[in-house]
Image (cartoon, one colour):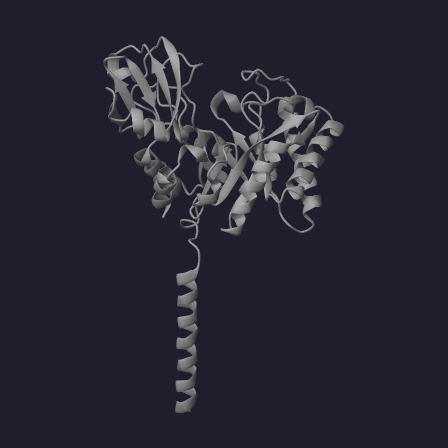
Length: 371
């Protein structure tokens, strides 16, 4: 009996050693059960891109041409580069996004059962042919034409039917494999053209574009990606938290919501100088600056002073000499968003855009915050 006990103990210890060795050699796993999803629109330097902390890269963009989802030759070659990253990190998901700001063709493609089927079948065929793992629909926005695209009062019900057709085509094409389906969605008035409750069962997750709250089309400066409302903001101001509440109120489970992070800033010029330019009228919109540019030329440089809005959990820059204001995300605000994701038990964080984080500093801030 004693010999048998000694033998069983040796076997158990051996199994523990094997498991420990396997864990030591395994690639890094996602932070807890939260996911990091990033859009990628530029494709230089992919050979050295560290994807160990990224769960899904969303290729931007396929286009809608004559009602079909298509890639030109250059886009197809770039997608192939992204898919190749799966060799280094097998768990990495690669999703193709169709659309983007000013990208039209959606309203027309969603109009009839026949046009919806053309869109859906072409999308599924594209995903399968290029070794991708799913489709992301970035229609900005159903029922709206601010981006200079066609829209219709029927976009709201038609969008639901379009996604239903895509879901069916992906399922048929999968042959047992589940291809994911997600959408990029704004909040506030920009989501009134989507029946959130109706599309929810068709989608694996929602990429909430909780950025660009303040831009060239808004009357004042302000946090363009704030987590909460600033004390200076209008009562109806858009925030990340309010976007999450809006989608949850429509019945979307928290785990399907991915809050957006901005790897770039927005600058306003000739800004009224009250409150260091925060939520003030301005003369003209100056433009965008990616994270490397912000660090190199703006944060603590050339007269730009960094401030932190404790209520909004957001940084901003003010130049008292030139009266210029910059809103952006940084590691501190991204850590706050990650903490919010954990507190609210959301799905994770989505960001735009991968090439704006050349050294992985911002992705690391999200990763560390989600651990």
